[in-house]
Image (cartoon, rainbow, N blue to C red; front, side, top):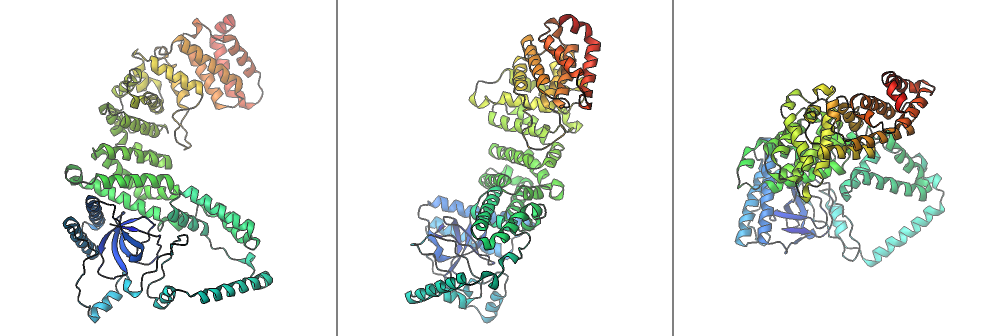
Length: 618
């Protein structure tokens, strides 16, 4: 194993760009003494300058062997894209890695071996020069940066420029440096004393379209910052340049102003050629190949878990840090084909570590794309999650992940396929309620009951008719629901819908109001709330009706809820805060304007049906 001493950037075909500290597995050092053929930790093979490397003495022999095995695994996975057939380059690399592995085990250093090679014939030399990968012998390796100065990223020059490279490799003498410095100073002074507008009118510079997204892409690739942070960094730098160099202000402002007009059109600029797009394509393709390879899941000796884990962790990082439009473009390809394959892989994969990572990936995808949620609802994933909740009763972390993902999927209120209710049935609802009422005494399971309450609230959004509502049917059996009802009241008092865990805008109603309306549609289900709970609920309704203005949908929903409470509960036994309610009713009836029409209609219906109780008890 070798470690990079400096940063190195190159756009040349056949070379690798890398950062200081990156590690490589040596494939071949016999082709050129200045350039070595290596494989990085991501399985990418290419040439790197020897002077930028040093042997990593810290790693043990086992670590080196594992690194070589990983490189071999990457080559095999890359070959799956072409039907499992290795090309010539892959065969050569694989042969070198296998030989290197043998040498490491035997204690022989590949770099110290002196290869014996015959001189190439003229015809072979011509073939080498005309091959797709440019020969590294066409130039010498760039010199490493000076250690006495701050390290910068050296930029590799184009191949086949010996004159330029030779000039760059010749050390400058002291007299030459002084002459250059003197010439530069004189030129700068002359430029400052001249009229800038006569030489170059910087305000008329043509700014290329799509420049800002390209800069942001480069900053993200070079720094590892998230897309949002990279974008902010670029805007800050351009703003500072515009503020401190008036001659460039117009150009900088033009680039900044293009952000709002080009954002929707700029996706294609960084889409196909962007690093995030390419890495997502590679990761999804490799995960699909893992799904299709049953041997990887059944052969215990096949150590692929570390590689798959690394892919999933990188995928999760990209989903969080990359441009959301790029991620959505890859996910939506071929009608969400990658996402469907990922669901099938989750169903087939039984290793806990991988399943947990897949759950987190699904959660990240749900947060990015609302349409992806609709697609996932139509797959086997909701059924698989329900099955996991009932079978993995002791694995509280996995139960937490599975239930939270269920909340995300159900939060839109979109109807699930009718066949899913074979598993999302009364037995499933009863299991969730039992867990809420009798949670295990374990610290890891402490938050699970609260998430299970949110799960039932989100699940209830799918039922339009309370008579055919699975949750209401279970509650109507008279089962104990003390903890469940108390948690509902706490959520109602907070006034925040706990199901809206994503930022998507949907037509789904407030899950708490929807649940209460369904509960109080029947006298049987309304009995899950004790008298104290009812009084707390009435107090919250009074506060909402008093504070909210005409036309507010929440006020209308609270009036509808109050009508059902009057109709199907034991409210008239205690008439809690009835006088305040009557005062609110009178105020609503006295409001002017069309915004209160719906509220007035509800109040009129209540006065018509319960007029005697309202007048006697107020």
